[in-house]
Length: 456
Image (cartoon, rainbow, N blue to C red; front, top):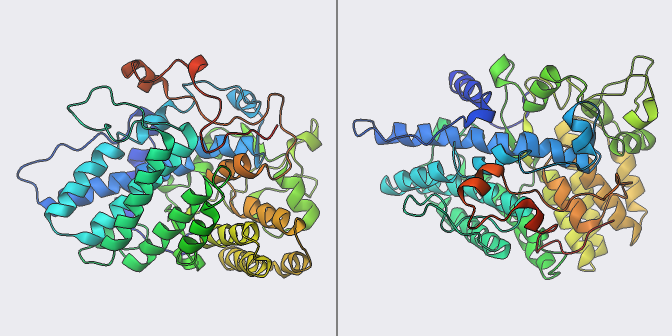
């Protein structure tokens, strides 16, 4: 079921995902340079680890928590019933917090960027910067203030927390640098498992990420809508340009949600909000997302009682070889739609919303013309509700759906008691090794600076 993008070299991907299956055990330690090694091989080796680390960051535990807390999925067994009810601690994303620094994180990114610069490989450098920007932009959205400017420096054992706004500014600057460097030469070729080193495609990804990160601040700074529009106009405009984690049919290449459903069957079931929403709308994507119950049809856990509930579809989005979208043309279109609406341009908002539907039609091979007709008849504020609802559906399992909810309070969920969390706790390992800068959980803020107001 691989969709779009360039197929990876099977031996490389198998080896990477075999390593990635050990994700909970610091799976890709920084590579020690061999003075006899060919520099290009060292750079490619670093980059393959960076790619896999980025994919697992976007597709693993954080994706599961974001899906639970926005009710795209529902925790129905073991620890996931507690996580579904917002009972979590500093160990639940400890591995993910470490991953932005080690095992294909910032340590390896710094080493790879240095090699790319030494070799005069501008395009390679730009692609590495896009990966770094994704990791640290998303990390700042999840944890707020994080170590960055002093991180991965061997001379600094306890890096300070950089203010969330400072991290975002650095990430935006990194993406601007990447866009410039992607106009040069010297790419990774086949070592780039996503796009084969194609600079134009990576430039579009960088623009979409810039737009996304501007939208993260729109709740507290409405001027970001205009900046998001400027970036998204040059972002991902076609489903063939979607940035995805790449998967294959053999066991160690499998989609991470497939692996989770296979190894922990019943721990997470279909979403209490998303499934009924799609069923009532007659949305044809539902078969790509969820399974039918034995008696036919689709049931969320709260509806099924003692009977089986629908699960994630292992022939659709959780098929063994289904790629996992990290940034897409649908997201880019809905960023434009929301930002145009909030800027008072209803006609442009509607046009962009239709483009978002077209991206989904191309990606899934479905007909969403009925949805387009419905949206076309709407005016504010119902149009904004429809735009955000369609983005919520299109962004299935993407981490950023949680950021969208925190920012817009849409969709209109019925949260579990206590309300949807505003941020993660810092990882336990980081607090233990950097205790002078990382506060105890009880002293950590409930929300991040870019999201000052809760929805509940």
